[in-house]
Length: 115
Length: 115
Image (cartoon, rainbow over the protein chains, first blue to last red):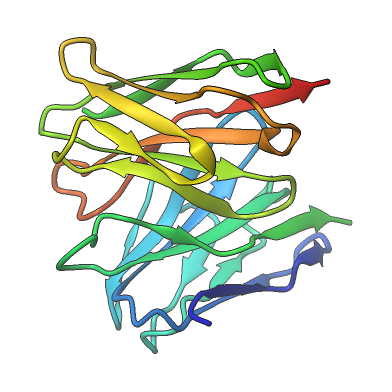
């Protein structure tokens, strides 16, 4: 089955620690996205990548970093500089070009909690 | 600049009653419009989308939405609510000018269905 997987489902971060959230897709999509979801605020874009080895900051990139070394993978690192990391993180992908390229498909999410 | 407003953060209906979730948007370019549904601790699932074809769009689970350009609205409806419809619903608009398939999401509407 084609889809997007995120791991882990729950992640705990200690003070001063960097943690990495995994996102993998087997939809052969060019574009991938990371969103942060907080109660009552909808989804806010952290980073997005249109193609391998390229990515751009979204609206709330401070305290986060990403890489896009493979088409299928777009990991997100929450650094110690992110002072309020507790949230639900969602990864998405889209075809990037062609028919239905505007439609984003989402993974199941990772909930990050601070110890 | 594009934006999305969802009127009512919480909506409660009786089982079998009409569901109406409101979404208004602003966009400087012809918009794509989406409705997504999110069940607790899960990712977002696409319900339906408008991409400049028919103004009345039918989606999954009996939902539909009508694009009204004069009212800048894209309200989501379902004739008869089912208990399984209880979830959070997000309206989104794209494309973002210069933003390559980026979407702007509303804050969400939580739908409760009671017997």
